Image: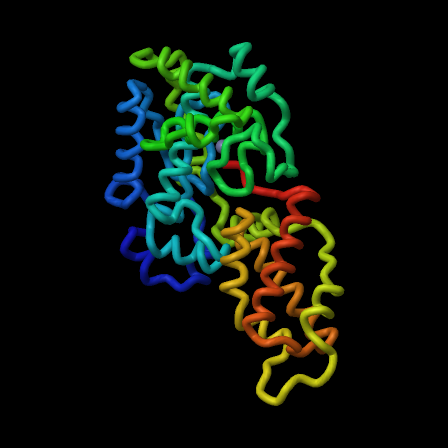
Length: 338
Ligand SMILES: [Zn+2]
């Protein structure tokens, strides 16, 4: 299957394909330039490491490898479209977002290249790199012990993520981290990264492994299996509890002649609501969409109708969904490890 042939396949045909039959590459795609920008940023800081990069199912840096994987869907516009349709968003799809994740992964790569996690001060500041990866984490949105970089307070997921996020904030050109984090306990982590990276300038990595893990040609799974697992992983796990909110916003009285029913209204505004809540909370749109679909079914069961003006209804739904999402975060948010 050549890259050009992918354009002619339907979604169903694509989903039946196996990763090993995709034959994609980074060269000649916008990813090539984005990786070059990352390499320039590392070089500008005097760091000689150029992490090796390959395509796989998701973003990840394997243990003890000074390089990382980029998801397949960023290597072809047809697959980005499929990702959006399956998951409602494309993580790393814009240049800006892609560079954010590249900087984060470069943090893991440099950690592995110099085995920084074995250092005493690293363990004191970030915690133990070897502590098991949690299935889910409950971030403290107001904590000042962690930098803010990727969505959903990702630095709080694990000590290794805390380091990678701190590195990403430190390396971003024009980051002004000293000012931005003045007075935050997280500043000590940034100062540590600053000190260590200056000392590593021009140094040769101790770990020069070029291992690639789960590269596309090795993966015999189909895209359909991949998306089934991914959707299950992102689904919110807590029991939603918003009936009272629905009764406050909507009514069981018959609706006005021209006003849509509650379910219809939600369906019509699902996209903007999911987008706004995702932007405000950092939770994946897929998870929020699941909640809206759940809510739509509930509105149908309860036969609810519009009671307020439409823009007021929209605002009230935004608040309700945001509160429910934050409750979901506090009962443990499942996120794919980056
Ligand atoms: Zn990570």
